[in-house]
Image (cartoon, rainbow, N blue to C red; front, side, top):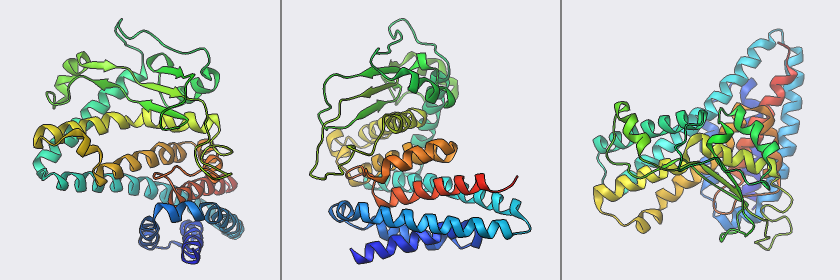
Length: 343
């Protein structure tokens, strides 16, 4: 535990100073990789202490950084440095996913040429999905569906700022808890087939394959672990939950998982249940959970603040732990520091 606390202190300090000191991101990457190796049970045990320590160091580091900027003769260069650091975080996130998909492909002896075709197919279907959710074009079998109990007044502005037509997504408020005791689920636009279309010229046929619209479902809260500060009790506000699920919708995460698992099944005849239990497939799911929060945090500073507050007391079991909180805290701190600097 002492090693973990020290690790997070060092990591937080380096993150706080990176935009101004120009430290190499390789150092932070090595420390983050070390954090990933810590077992889930250990992560849960030390989550709250490590988060509190991270917040303290971030506060101290940002205060020192702000003071340094005020004395600087060229504050504009610091704003550019902050922008670059945010770009690095996004690029690292994209690179992490590419490597995870490559590792998953290796598990099933998928060739580079086959993987390239799968990646191209993902891009085509995602582009099609983005086009459809940006303005409602649903056929008659998919009428608009918004449950009256869904927090529509809060959801609509979040959807619109992410370029999603509210009428192009089903918003459901379940009266029954989810079997896995989660607060919400999100499903991207889904299709009947994923194997027949590999070029943008197939858009017409892809649209004809639409099986169901994107869906966000909210569930009643049920306490589900032994912590007093358990996963969502005091942490995840309704707004942060909506940001998270809309993040999945924007990135079409369930669509990406479906295309990858379908391709592996057709190429190797592997059973779907075996694919879903593959460790690298689980890593891909975990990566999607990271993206659902880090990407909106990078894009919208108010979302970064909301998500950071939500994760301050609430980890996501077997998905999002201290390393994820460190990234959210860094993004939020950089946004706030940027706002304090003169234009």
